[in-house]
Length: 123
Ligand SMILES: [Cu+2]
Image (tube, rainbow, N blue to C red):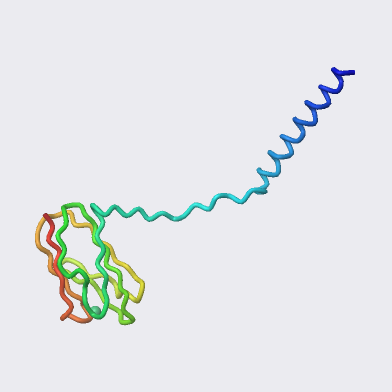
């Protein structure tokens, strides 16, 4: 009799484990939402905010291989224009990134408002 009870207990236990397994598998527990992690390495990634018709910071010293991201916070559209490239029109909230693979001093302006100026020094 005791043996029978033990066996029954084991069966019930196994059944409940199975049930829990199934309910989890069916998404019973909300999946941990993976946050979209934009890896920003402050050593190699640099931000320039475009605001009030100005680049901030306007002058930046970085290292070869570093990336600069310009983000427009103005209602007006701006671009980032250098000798070798120009970004698309950046509307409010838009960003443009460029990785500098050569050392040097790179002046940039806004193609729409050429009085907006900045300079990236790549060491
Ligand atoms: Cu502009």
